[in-house]
Amino acid sequence: MKRLRWIDISKALAILFVVYFHFFRTYFQHGVLPPPDWSNVAASALTVLRVVWFQISGLGFHAVGVFIILSGWTLMQSTMRRAESNAIAWGSWYGARFLRLYPMYWVAHLVYLVSPFVARLEPVDSRIILSLLGLRFIDIQMNFMYLNAAWWYFSMLIQFYLIFPLLFWAARRLGPWWFLIMACAAGFFARYILLVVWPQNGLWVLGGFAICRLPEFALGMSLAMWHRQSTERVEWFLLRGAGFVVGLILYPAALQLYHGLYEYIFVDFATGTCCMLEIVGIAGIILLFQGPAKLFGLVGLYSYGLYLIHQPYVIWLGLRIREVPIWMFLLICIPTLAVLSAWGMLLEKATNTLVNKLVSLRKPTASL
Image (cartoon, rainbow, N blue to C red; front, side):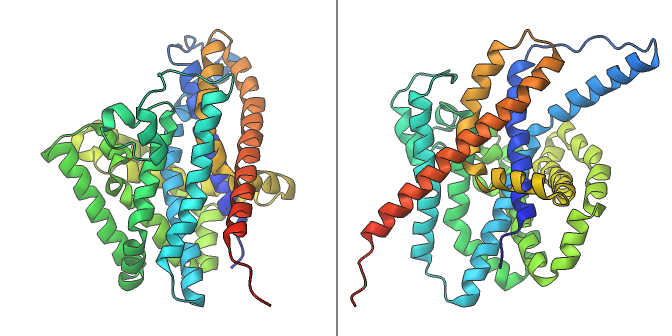
């Protein structure tokens, strides 16, 4: 099965939205929009644009849910393809996942420690050991957001990878619908326990306990199965505008789930799904244009590197441009996103090349 370019484009849009969100939050943390001006058509239009920009910019963290969904999709897709050709050797599977995740994660730590132009908001101390191991959920309040807050996602991801063989077996045994229903029940129940019955630090619900984000991950796995069963139907819904319209209609209702404790149990799944429908819908439009599709596809292919390195850079820069007007901030965003994408791409590609060479050197040469 060939790689789906629109998945890579969607990953690019999601990671760029996350990077932009972190940049926006730093720049506008204490900012105030100018007072509304309805004196004429031009001023009214500018007022509306400012409000729309502010509201959409504040939704950037929903793109994390998109990444969880797409991670479940791509992992399920690649594992199903492997299962069709041969029985899965889960030991080798774990080894491949380790080499995919950890080396670049460690490189990101090194880059953080030695690079200029990064925000260093905390001292480097013994907590870095747990960070390097990815076990940031240990003593979660002290470690989960340590050094680079974006790295919390990594500790959630390794939990999903750890239990993925069980999820894969359940998905194939139950089928996509029942698997999704059961996974949502488990995830929502875990959130209910940690939010209502036994209230805990909200970082556990954010992703410290991965089961709390299982509904999004399972949705991605089910979508991969539905896509395999009926490729044209799924792609028509997601890429031809129907999914985009559905997401746009449901998004306001999803945002209302922030306004109550019990409603909050479902908010990450609802907002992540709506955001995914919007992003994939936009990816469908980009896919129609060869040049932009190739560019965004490349960014999405190396989105992991951009995710790991971006936040200290945008915080550093955002703190230094807080006094510039909004229009200048938006102009600065474009080259900033481009430079960080290229830097993350370079680091990830170089790391993968080095790891592949080292692995190939360790393999015994076949006898002639």
